[in-house]
Length: 209
Ligand SMILES: C[S@@+](CC[C@H](N)C(=O)[O-])C[C@H]1O[C@@H](n2cnc3c(N)ncnc32)[C@H](O)[C@@H]1O
Ligand SMILES: Nc1nc2[nH]cc(C(=O)O)c2c(=O)[nH]1
Ligand code: SF4
Ligand SMILES: [Mg+2]
Image (tube, rainbow, N blue to C red; front, side, top):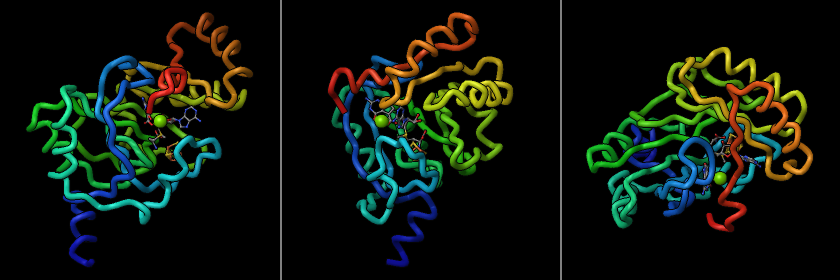
């Protein structure tokens, strides 16, 4: 037990809620086939989170990173998305290194609420009001993807846009349950401030994972 805990601390074994091959449904790489690795555990507590089952890390099996990579190798796609839960709760150096050694492009979905770790080809940073981001995320973000659930989220998005690199893509994504209320506003917003783009959770329309 103690040995397993040490392995998790070192990032050599990680709690995996699920892993599945699907189509990236959101953001800049929408439409691309990718193997998703969903790590268990999150302490951010977004009221509208669409994977609340992921929050308790203790519910999910701890797998050696070699096992995790073996799962990804079963499919022809060579893009992996590490998500959660909140993946930055873990030390992601060893897993990302192993994935890259096997020829994968490695992407991250994160709230940035914990110190950055790992080697990534693409980092999607989705900041949350419920737990403020760690400063290490701002220079790593390739994509800033803000979920719009409330009118104040437009200002929240602008505040974060000031702190990421100029080259970082800036994206607004309606919260799934509020999209009828906010889609019109987001469309008008993007038309008047074209540094922003819209992302919809297309996998939910396609009814795929
Ligand atoms: C489930 S989170 C896991 C990764 C990380 N904890 C995070 O929040 O970025 C994956 C992505 O889904 C977004 N998301 C979660 N629930 C959502 C919802 N109800 N509507 C729209 N986007 C949502 C998050 O903001 C994040 O960009
Ligand atoms: N198809 C699909 N695309 C996604 N992009 C980000 C997701 C996530 O939960 O991190 C996600 C997801 O859960 N499914
Ligand atoms: S940070 Fe991500 S996984 Fe955690 S509660 Fe928020 S949306 Fe869900
Ligand atoms: Mg999702």
